[in-house]
Length: 348
Ligand code: NAD
Ligand code: TYD
Image 1 (cartoon, rainbow, N blue to C red):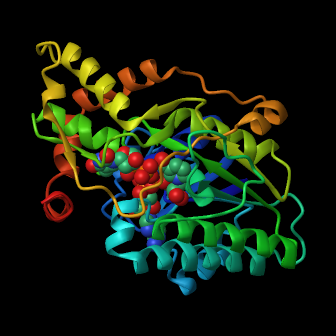
Image 2 (spheres, helix red, strand yellow):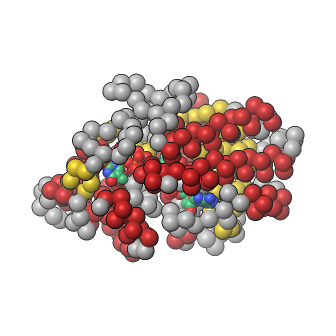
């Protein structure tokens, strides 16, 4: 039986990727390796945890000995690497943990994969999940393509850019068969409520201020998380070796417009007065080094692999809000404990 290791499978995007692969490919055994940081949550996968083609192993990708032993024991045919520190604001206050997980962790995985298969990479693949933030910031016009120069501005994006470079370097130097995808901002169920959309959903539910950074005129390109999982599945199975695919939602929103749409949809669902939640909008101090605009040209994956987002933003946002409103216990669990300290420091 073929074996694939998915790193970071207990996190937001990873859990959707794990679920898709476990359900879709009964002839592949999926190993989910995750160290369960604050962002990792096994309850994200409670519906598939008993499937016979699924195994969870708790472990840290920064621990090279653990990773090497794991690869020797299970002889993985494929790697889908999502484990990362992923929040820009945390990277500003603690860059080193981003270097450790995102750079050192990635190189540990590359080494283990290279040493396991040595020169015989036939039928093997290393898939690296990355972000559009490596390209830096756009002005009012233009789109990121696969050939846009890297120009990262935050410690997070610098660490992801570095990991992308290592993956490419292992391809050139050792012939390691890789595919990289750089995706725009995701949203959907199981998103940790430190990122814009889930944080604001949680605050609207609790009638807490909605902290918009700067003037709110920053632009992001939003993609529903299950559409990202489909794109990863396609590019993992049908993408070409040594290629990069940009993945995006064809869906740009200024933060302030997005927040107003979110308020409107939530007021309807919570049967609150029209514009009630908009009153919670509070402009706060800007994020240092805040990238003005991200926007992806996803025409390559569209033309070569036939991928397109399946839901509109309005539909995806409505599905996301519904999920949070019917999973308040999940929200309460992840917003207790250390989250309270993070929140106090970030928004005091
Ligand atoms: P997340 O923070 O929700 O999840 C990360 C997961 O990795 C968690 O389960 C965490 O426990 C695990 N992890 C962290 N450090 C680890 C370590 N040292 N060893 C093992 N496991 C570890 O992140 P996400 O939003 O799901 O992002 C997943 C990947 O997709 C990341 O590589 C990120 O850079 C990339 N990405 C994210 C977005 C987005 O909008 N969220 C967009 C494009 C790309
Ligand atoms: P975020 O969800 O952190 O994703 P990223 O920084 O990776 O794009 O932020 C999305 C946008 O929302 C970004 O422009 C920063 C902004 N933002 C706020 O205005 N307030 C907040 O409290 C947060 C977390 C983000």
